[in-house]
Length: 459
Image 1 (cartoon, rainbow, N blue to C red):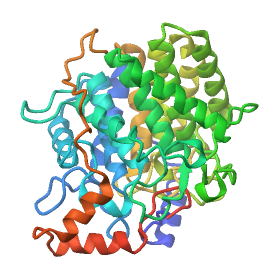
Image 2: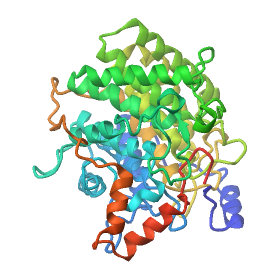
Image 3: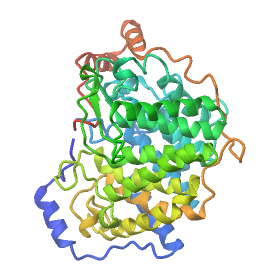
Image 4: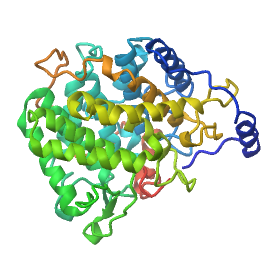
């Protein structure tokens, strides 16, 4: 679902009236960057009401039609705020992050809560898993001792996705987009679901030293190339294809976060393999392609939808992930820093320049290249600029840790192994005496072919 301002007339007037306005933000010094990031974090959280009485912790308002946002974007927001804390040192929102993350872990500590089944994809679960992994790598305060650690939560996600039920034989392997078979998109295997899995596997390998995670990452990379989602000539990463066509009907739309999730994962593999030339080459190729494709004139553009005005609410948040993940690449594959950091800086300068909208005079829009506020506002737009601004401090950070270099997060090699097949869980709930009206409503929605898809075809 694309976000539209409540009144098109108001949006036009705001954009026109603020076209020449001066942004209140500065990124000239470290102090300026921290001050700007602090304000952006506050503004982002004005879209969050999960800490209010009667609301659900951890998620942004939704999913449609209840609100603009699908479940996964809550996990993405907490990842953005964990990076904000790590890079600025501001712990103001740490309790909120802790509450939101732990509320959504699900009964089996694998980020599969039953109340989000109508829009639960492997990519959605993967985003929450990557945020848990980030918490472990950044040494975010550990959960209470009676709760699973960040590492264990990331392992829970990975292990459930590595199961044969998820990696079926269609298209010679790979993860499907959706998890329940009744969801719209279950017949689609896409790059972002497999990219999250690849990224998480590479990072778990580096953090734990367990080579089985690296083997999964290798296999996923090979599958992406074999199925044709990763172009061997251009290094473009395409969206996906349908299992009934053996995934040969490749949708060649390119999204920035697909490139970034694989580039970051490849950088972690480079680091884990102590500089293997194969992974160095893969990092260099993806970074070169990513920057040239999505950063014309050095400024982030979501090429698949931005110029056409067709970006969905989901797509309006992709620029921030690219900035954050590319900045991390410079820490685990330092040879990329001279190439990446100047581009991220130029892009961030454009991003903050257009934050002149709304009643505050500092709301951020989506079209950074235009240089003016475009009237588009939302959590994704704020998240993008917060991620970009915070990432300017990456050179002053120590980078992600491992279990052997200061990591404190508790893992669990059996995490996810007790998770039942998801459809069996739904069936059990359906026949259980515990199935109240709310759960029954969810099951009706699920059985009706999953009204709420996630991204690839637009909402």
